[in-house]
Image (cartoon, rainbow, N blue to C red; front, side):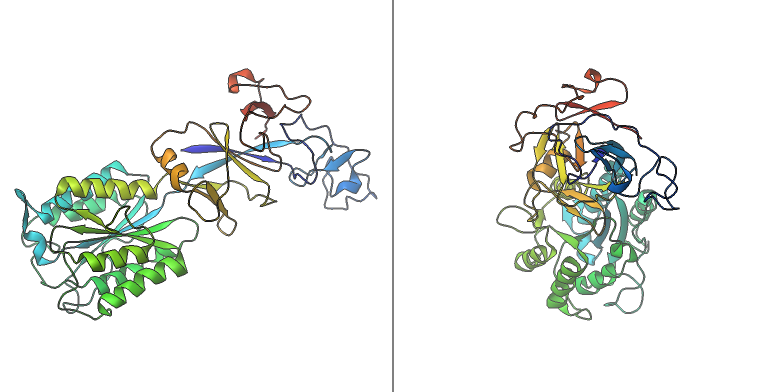
Amino acid sequence: MRATLLALCSALLCSCEGGMGAPAGSPAPTADGGGGPSVKPGQCADDADCGGSMVCDPVTKACVPADRCGAYRVTADTVQPNLLLVVDRSCSMKSLVGTQSKWQAAVASLDKLLTTHQGKIRFGITLFPDREGNSCSQGAIPVPVGSGNEAKIKSLLQGALTWGDTYYPNGPCVTNIDAAMLQAAADPALGDAGRPSYLLLLTDGKQALCSSGGGDPGTTKTIKDLQQKQKVSTFVVGFGSGVDPFQLDIFAEAGGKPATGQRRFYKADDQAGLDQALTSIAGQAVSCTLKLGQVPTMLDKIYVYLDNQEVPQDPTHKAGWDYDASTNLLTFHGATCTALEQGKVSSVDVIYGCKSAAPDGGAPAPCASGASPCAGATDCPAGQGCVAGCCLKVVD
């Protein structure tokens, strides 16, 4: 998904409330007149370089009328999130669900996840217990999170269906969830503040025969620290009847991405249920974060429109959107994110500087002088775009 970011001049420097006209020409500063040696011919350094009712646009360094806004188009790209799969390969995964083993069902569901979301998510995988060190410890992550890992992970999982393969679930027969989560937390990609990161813990059992990572309390602490200190959320999936529902609920709450309903973890009893759980989880990870091509100059003057309807900012992350200046990421939440995930939104516009719709999000306000009303881009002259009912002049 690509969105258009229309970066408008500071609202402190313009009074438009319903669109804008084209920027006026800008006089060149004199050699001794305020611009200083760093100002290029035809540009301004501040308002003093502009005469009459003109002001200096801080973005373009051009003099523009004080009652107009210049518009600039910048791309805003969907950010591929990180998702590390933390998969249980303990001996119990050989037990049957229906006519196949839980391991066969898990491999098939994970393969489908990787195929469906190829190029949309940066995947990685680790499996527990592994065969490095003692039975309770974990060695290096087999496939750390990164771009283009789908084929590598699929190959690993397909090979693991064969008896004798390194990752076939035939031992060690322990369930060291605590050590696996500590291992996963050390993946360097999770420290990338420029993109959302998630863990997906898939297990068919409970902590057993090991406690090198602190047992269940240690796992809870690891998950909670990731969520609170690194903003890395954890989804928890319990597969089959051998899980500890009480403990998985605790893990899921600590991870910040619990399932809806009475159970806080995602419960799956067969491959169809596992497919459904993984589809729901992946949907929450993609499509809802944009990296803006330009950092807004005024964080309190950002306006977001979905299909020309204004969407409010919500710092509580229950709905609407929020912006993180430290990462330059704009993220949608709640029902707004769901609408994007389900393809119910055809256009996303992010505007900063001047609002271009009525404050209540209803019908667009009258367009500014020189800006004509529109229902779509085809109603506007060449070089202009339709945002919230007004033709706005845009330049690359």
